[in-house]
Image (cartoon, rainbow, N blue to C red; front, top):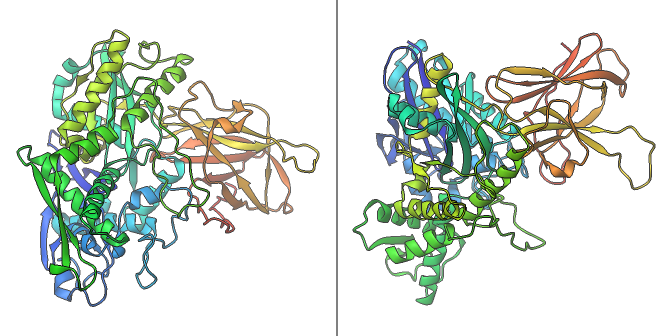
Length: 620
């Protein structure tokens, strides 16, 4: 029997859930076998998304061996990897998912662990992501398939989740990581939608009594590395309730990792006042210790403090380690007031003045205030929806009024953080005479996305309610104007809409308007733009000022000339296709019906390097 499998490939944790496609079988969470201590393999509901690159002499063969391999792996994944990395952070790969979405680096280049010394081996963000998925595949096949190919993970209907804010390139790279791991047929689903699918499934028929037409559900998903906001409208579809996603926030690299680092800096300053100064790698180890202390304090409200240990550096340190403690007062002061401050509605994230030079790292949010990012999201989309056919009546003069909130992500397990966010949002609503939002009872925030993805696999087979929404952003391609050369003046670019916001997966659209000229037989560049705010644009509409849009990395390609002279310009019309798995394709069709296809599976070169060619389909 084929199963619907959901995989939450998270920044800090990965989870897998499954359920029968047919029948009424409930969602089950797969306990992922992994090394938790040297030589000790146990099943866990969560696989920590950490990759450890041990020294050849660090572990014996028996210490590192997994039950499905004859030879011990050279790279460790999961709980043991995270624990060893806390002691030796220079060998630990973390936040691979954030690196995979970072357009400013070559995501296929072996660059992680970032900043590690030359003797430490490196892996790429793509390879690290594939390694986590390969561990899931091997663990599943060992425990569930037992030699039967029909029961292998690759034979199931696999749904893989991504942040709603992932652009076309990050989505395609996620699919590529799955293929590299042996999962050739996967479907993508946005994480906030997966969380809502999990809620609907857990509620059964009761969900229809929890919400009503006109409701606007705000999904707040704060995980280890990202913060995602989505708005989902409850609509009346011929007497039946329906769900439709109407807005998606920006890709915000802000989450539990930032909070752990903030706690580590607070503890480091406390140690410095005691005359104990930490180096860079000790600070990384302190970050892991701060995370463990944070989780202990949030899990047990009766604790006043939690101990933190940091590996020592040098023979002069008694006992070889430094010790401190994180108090509950420090925890609340740093996280609640620092990341969820009370701000007025209409507040926007603060842009810090940047230095001229910076290390090459992740593009973290410059403002850690989640409440300011949420205020900007609600006000920006109030303006964006004002000129469009909104699926629900737009309440609120200055910002969209959520009537219900669904929390998801490991950070939202901390009750003080949720309470502060509800206080702030309730205050905003009160200023415009609206009641506070209802809180929808969430499933386990750590597992809801994986469970919801498994449920979505069953929904795609025709069982259950489907959330409509399509693409989370509108996509555009740059078209260069034909004009005489003018010194110092590049030809103007029009951004032509390929796929409007909400274009459903598996649909194709032929762009109206005049023919374009396609250059074949020589290297050319295709510029791709996107936005989450222009809802009114339709396929073929042009945006004259491309600076209004967000530009992604370009495609460098040499299109097959098909018997034409190199550099010849072929008259074509454009056709856009959003695939079933949620990625974007562009076809350029000539007058004879032959098509050149471009997929946004880009190779982004490092700064200053020539871009390698992207794959381009030959004329069909």
